[in-house]
Image 1 (cartoon, rainbow, N blue to C red):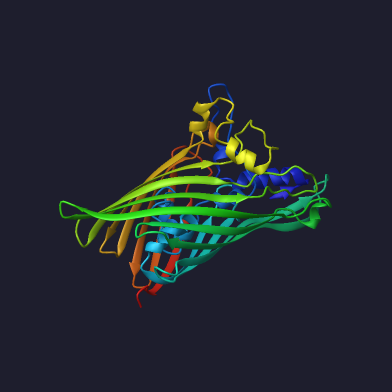
Image 2 (cartoon, rainbow, N blue to C red):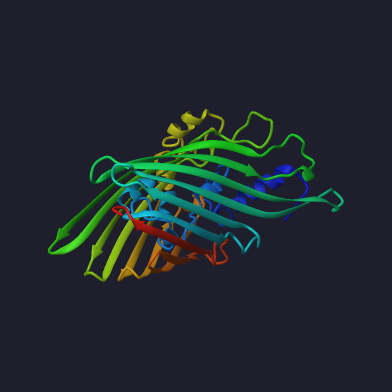
Length: 376
C-alpha cells in the first residue's frame, strides 16, 4: 500500500478495517449512503470460526474460550475448568494481501461460587505501508497494526441467570515517523463491557431442549484520535441481543437455532459526531436524519443453525443482513468443526450475495483446547 499523506492513509485504513461493506454499499432512495463509521472497527469483526459459521451470532450460545468475545456471562454454564484458543483470519485479502486478524482468548472456571475469569488478545495487522513524496520516490515504510487486550469476569446470580463485566485497553498505530507528520500519534482508549445471560434446560414430550437468552454492551469507552486536535472519533460501542434454542433428538444428534440483533450505539451518519461520548450513546437511538424508519435500518439481524453429531462433528450455516445504505453486508456463511478429546478444530467460509464483494471467500480458522471438569 502506498500513501503520500496522513489523511488519505487514515481514511484508507479505516475503510479497509471495516468489514468491506463500504466498498459495496448502495444508496437509499434519495441517493444517500449512511454507513456509520468509527475508530478501531476491528473490535467488531467476528474473530472465530464457530460463530463465524453461523453468520456472527453468539450472544446467547457463547461457549468455550471463544465465547469470551460474545458473552463471557454464558461461560458460567461451561463444565470445563480451563480453556484457550487460537484464531486466524486473512481479512479482505481480495483487496490487500497482508491484512490479518488474530484472536487468542483463555479462561479459568472457578466453579459456581468462584465465577469465571478470562483474558483475550486481539491483534489486527494492516500490512506494510510505503510512503512516497510528490515525485513518487519512496521515503520510508511502516507496518500498521492495532491491538486490544481484554479482561473478563462473570458470575452466577441464580441457577439460570448470570452477569459479567469486561475491561479493555485499545491501541491503534496507523502511521509511522516516515510519513513526515510530526503531529500524529497512535490512538489509545480504555473501554468496558457488560453482559447478561439466561440459560434454562427443559423437556417437551420426552425431548431435551435448552433455551438461552443473552444481552451485551461492548466497548463503552472514551473517544479516540490520532492527532493533537480536539476532534475525536467514537469507538464502536455495540449493543447485542440474542437467543438460542437447542433441541436434542437423541443422545447423538442435536440442533441449535440462534438469532442475534446488533446496533452501534454511536451517532448516526449525518448526526452530530462532536457531542460528548455519553450523549452520543443515548442519542444514537433517536438521531437518524430520517427518523424511526432509519433507526430500524441500523439494527443488524443475523440467524444461524448448528448441528452436532455425537459431540464429535458439527455443521453450521447462517445468514447476515445489513441495510444497503448502512453498509450492505449481506451474506450467508458455512462452517464445520471436529472435536477430539481436549481440542476442537473449526473453519468457516463466507459467501456474499453480491458479486465481486470485498468479503468474498473470507475464511476463518480456529483451534481451541479445554481441560478438566469443574467438579474435579
